Length: 151
Image (cartoon, rainbow, N blue to C red; front, top):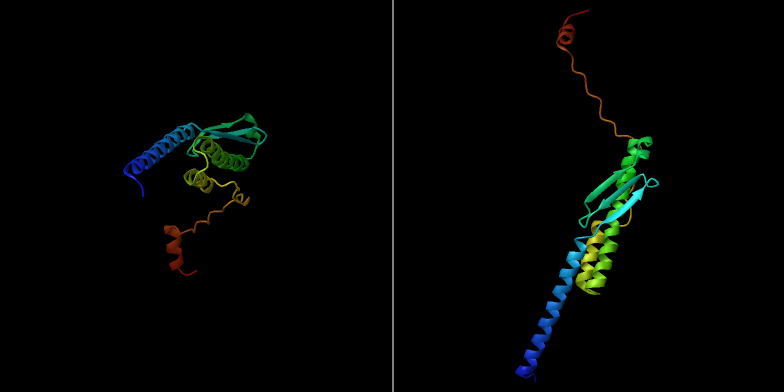
């Protein structure tokens, strides 16, 4: 049976482990807060940097984008941003492995980034432009009067 000294020792060891783990997670949190990922597209004509939350912190377009169709610039920019966001999960994984080590909690953090920013690109938007419905012409006041008169 455990003596009071054994229980005190076990509680002390547990407390030390929890404190050390919390310290490592704090270091990981501080490191993740400084992360950024930059990706480029269109032979470097488009560059997007995202911060740790996945929100773009910088978007750069070279003069070469002026020779591209606006829809293509938009498509390339969005794909570039998604690649940068997906790269966050790998960077967070490296930080967690370095500071926290292999744990279920660290894996849960990395999995949350993978779910939020998946590696797979969604299907590209269709090339066909969306057409707005044509407005229905309502008759003008003089048109209404003509409808009432016989020919």
